[in-house]
Length: 183
Image (tube, rainbow, N blue to C red):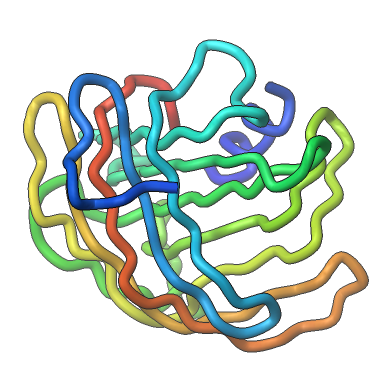
């Protein structure tokens, strides 16, 4: 599921003081480790220009082997690269999903992936490829139009040269419109 989602997005900063409305979404978190900083995005997923616009959106897949909650966000990093975040939880309603990615054997394993400095276009190059190995994703609210929640945890980043380092994510939040097909 992640590979297909990243493939679609490869081819193709939010302040929580004011909640997004309509089709706009928000995602934010702090990270420390291989690279340290914050990721803050607010915006509506565009039909085109997904690599050059800031946006966040989500989807609930209610049935089947891919059942779960999926939230994606993207923002430009430079004129030729962007950062992409993918949150996936193995639940479709409010509650907490425990991240234990390295020991997961389900079709949808709860985790947070992010690619920092992902090349725009069809060439798959990046600065860091990171994922949470432990932690939690809490879905605080699911309505017919929005998904809201929080996340945090610890994981591993791999550089484009294969160097691996530990990292942590804190203060993760999302408030996104449900956009069918985003995952």
